[in-house]
Image 1 (cartoon, rainbow, N blue to C red):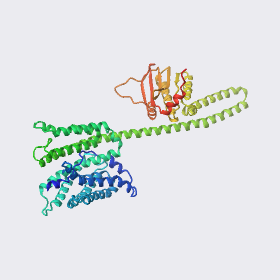
Image 2 (image 1 turned 45 degrees about the vertical axis):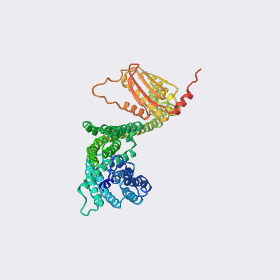
Image 3 (image 1 turned 135 degrees about the vertical axis):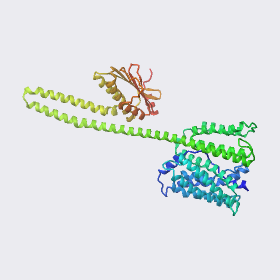
Image 4 (image 1 turned 180 degrees about the horizontal axis):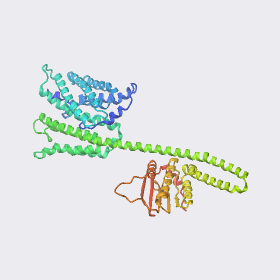
Length: 564
């Protein structure tokens, strides 16, 4: 009778860590009654209904196939895991699905006893209460993410809930008016503890990676195949008959490296699944008298395996929480960098808009005002004595010089030639103007390059502008060279000078200036990188390299001269 009772125990997924992504994602999502109809039925209701149905039937099916899964109990832990990641408005649907699956198991398969169905429905009520407490006390964290949440889960979900559930199940099973047998309650409670410890973290963590694709970084066919091979090797080693008493304690430690490797490669989800497989394997072998837990009869071997699973599972749960917190911090840092990059990109767009507005104001307003002043000076020159006219002419010349300077500043703020004639013409004109100033001999080499988008050409032009300004201010260079070319699948912008070079590195890192930060950000927006190194000319080399799209490559092939 006892083996039949234990027949419906739960075995779940060990390991831990939080499912943060699942609940965190749903906590910020707004659900309406209409949106919870079809979406919730397919996402939460139907899978849970099938899971509870199979959970009731799995022990019997496995027994017909020669397996002894009498320590495996799925419906209760499955419902708890579902409630921990499902939105609160969908809870009633989850409970209804679990109850429906249990009733279907009784209706379709008479081998499922009615008193067991009633005991399962009572356990579901306890599960809802525990889920409400766990979510209420988790604070801003995701379920099972912090040490406090894990401790509460172990106390309530893996101790109090299994004990109450075992007492309730045994009361209906034995039909004993005086109450269940103490030994029966303890055996069922131990099986329930193992099941909740294994299944709940697995469900929560699976939901986590489904909703957070960035957490699947270690999942690949090669790594999954390697993990499966190691699990098979563990099964073969455990299934052998070991007469040496020294080797048996080592066999109990054999899964530890595998679980740690799964935690490192796959994260907490992979560790939870691996622990679930190792636990099922250990319990199956123990009841057959094999493995590191086979010391006595099948019942005592199973108890030994379950105690080992509880210890290893709880330890892996806390270790997984540490790894999950590290991963969460890394993902948050990546998200912060991504947002910072987006903010910097918007700031550059706003900067270009302001430059365009200022350039337009300088050209249309200030220059027009200066032209009007020059005209009035011409009128005044004709009205004053001839002796005073040279002063007015000199003033007009100064005014014309100021107007030319303003026009030059306007063109540098907003190079309209870039938009109308392209990057090559704009850079050639820029290099000619800077060389004409006499302070720096600037040489430009622009090979046949494809026409880029307006934003890409503007970013490249601004990088050249900023780099030449830095050379003028700091490098004390006499010669600078600008190269724009295609190298393989990448476009290369290279600026060399013969100046004093970059400052020598010191113990204290030197913060880059705003100009260098601006160039790095523009290179990032181009999808490339900015490199600063020693130039063959003796000064500094600044190189930007970024991939060119396929259409640009076709354009390059068209514009390239044919060989003679």
